[in-house]
Length: 410
Image 1 (cartoon, rainbow, N blue to C red):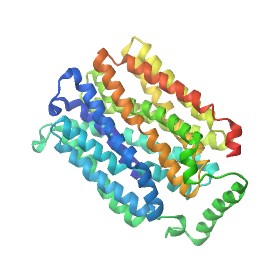
Image 2: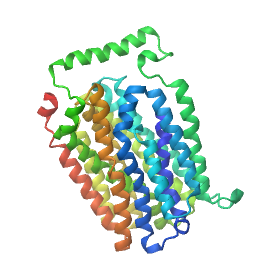
Image 3: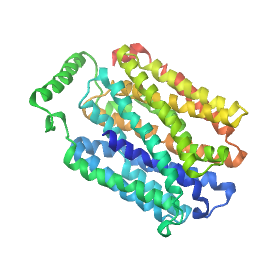
Image 4: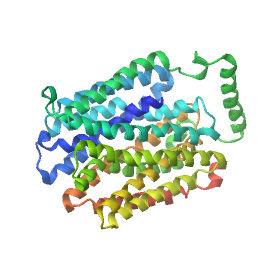
């Protein structure tokens, strides 16, 4: 699962690097290129949003092994086909199709973790799983930068090599998933019967303890104000994450004026710094059983990083502050999903998790588009950074409105 998520997240990394060479390919003027790129990068999440909930419900019915393999193989094929884009329209179409192909992957993985781990261990577990995004950044950033330097090799541009070679691993891994990933712990051939019984007994014990609490059905998830509030909170988080990640290589390139390979190495730094903090915050959240303040504090750190990066006059100090904001963005993920899965079980979990993730991931369209439009209009990234900081500040305040008594009741 961890390796699958690393491969999945490489797409979020490589499109930010491909942007460095795409203006002439898309055939647009420099004055609107930021907007065109931002919309194209974000269209992925529109396709993701439309097919997210159906995809997760299908996985609940047909099993994780087949459905996750299907997702990976199809998205790998489409990702490699990105090497054939020749205009803004083809860029838009393939990004939208890629979102459709990948829909259901992340919430499907979160749902899959609920089959194995009880609630009290989920913040640390999700945080560990979510470190796949930062490992993808650590690996994918220098690799993407190096691939851009393959300009002219075998008659292909660097950005074409980038899309081609980073799509193939998803196809291969999808084939492996068919033969390796068990649908449930009871299907795991590599576990002894005692180990299977132990895993199931912990989940059964949690289910017995939860009988005194109200559990949401699928319909309840859709009509719950608290689930929609969590969707809004996750939306604000993804505005920050993808507004950041889709544009960081361009910001580094503008500040350092270095080669693509060097930009890739610099881009990996904030991802490396994030791993330790993600694990510490996830572990501490599980140990204390507290979720809200762990999410809120992470959001406030990200907001401070965005604000400082917009305010500081020294470009290298501003870049350092911007890198620090990723620590907050990533550290919020584990405790947030542990809090969210507290409310849901069974089919409601499949639909509810997908609802939160799909609505939240619309922020993946808003973030890059917002940054691109503001950059084109103002000629600077500063206004976008101020707004991203405000978005994360609002997110931190909203998560605190979910009272501890509400968590106990539900």
